[in-house]
Length: 393
Image (cartoon, rainbow, N blue to C red; front, top):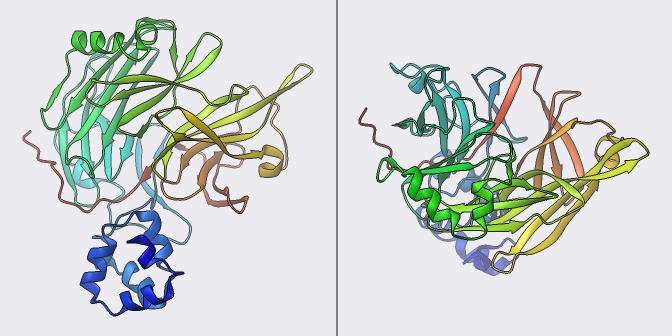
């Protein structure tokens, strides 16, 4: 189907131009978002058809930009990508923040159109959650998962949602009490509306895929966002003398360990792009007493079954920023990878810029100044489908 609609297949494209708009939109709705972007180049009528706000809601969506949070909470800003207008959503989430009982909210993450908040956190209680769809203003409350410790070394909750597979979303709560200590993992399903039992979840994973050492102690969870690829959530951890990627499925039935692809690099990011797992590492060199961060390496897991990693791209910090970094900390941070294109988003602490790096053209463009109070940036892909988000609270 894609070949028939490709901009280079002139006769086929001409034939498709004769179809009614509704039929064309119905065909395009079954094509990946990365291809829709290419088809806008077929002709001006095709570009207008795809860009029409009424039609866009029926077509596969791609990354529109980032919700911005300040250092202490959520401040209701949206940063659009270059050349794109802001999506038709309320970036202040007033439909959620004005509800009774929803207070002290913090934006945790997003996945395929849904956004995850925690709320009500205080020293005496664990936080509860709210999952919402900004495009439709649907939302649902999720109870607290609890935690192994009131003051854990590392704690996170990841949102998983794949509308192509299921209308239901999942949360995975991960908590590590102390350095190299036991890691507790629990899962929540919007279908069953309950968190998994701690004991059964742990015993299930301890016996599979090399996870016994990982969950019982001997590894440290890295504070990096997870990546949902091939039905599994991928997280970066550090075992003695090496980094690894630990993967768990959303129902706790499968787990595996995937090796970190580049032993010479320090992990900065794992993400999904074009259906594959991508890893970004910071290349290191030591010169006398100075540890230099000299560049980025981008790897893609081309064959998931055989763990076949391929080096996709490498770029030096000298080319990116005009200098190497010789600090015991990072001036730059990898924020996200585009889900459909070979683009990486970075932030830089020294100038508070949000930047876009194109691996094809090797161009780096700063397209937004963040200011001094930003805390986190959450990527957003709209989803206009009718979802299973019914709230009974």
